[in-house]
Image 1: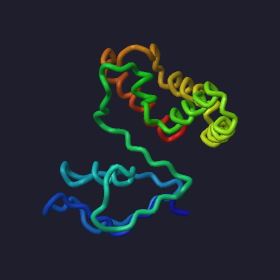
Image 2 (image 1 turned 90 degrees about the vertical axis):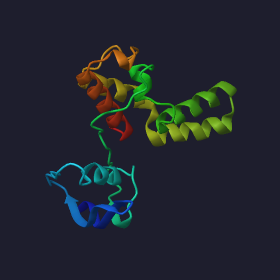
Image 3 (image 1 turned 45 degrees about the vertical axis):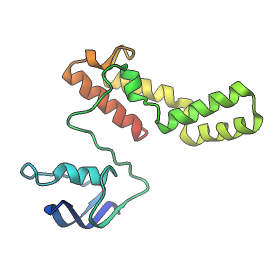
Image 4 (image 1 turned 180 degrees about the horizontal axis):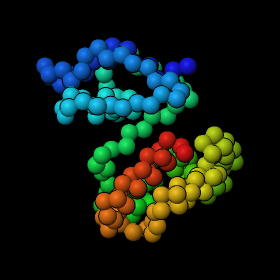
Length: 170
């Protein structure tokens, strides 16, 4: 079974082609290396696989059982915000569900509460806090309320990894 299949992937910027007619499959147990000279499109290909960039041509299929996330070489943070705020950004889907649940509780709307309760079940919002704490502990990220700007390069990479893992639902 293929986790990912790519056929005829093509991407250009203007008249400059980055890659043309790339095809490959990734299956369980495969070990993948992406090696090429600078400027040839490695990062762009990874962004396409993660859904952050569009193809010019070709077909890409990713199994519904697979989550693809791109761990950026140089993560971008809001330097004035805390580690926790950078990891749990406002638009995070589980955070939105938790906020909807809290609002339904606050206004005591039984219909909205029933719907929010179901959404919490659907996204496993009940254990979200516990998952975040486990990821932080395994990555040795402490003092979550400090600004991310106070962290060293290695610590910032761990914060970025935590954000990536939380985004894909680990």
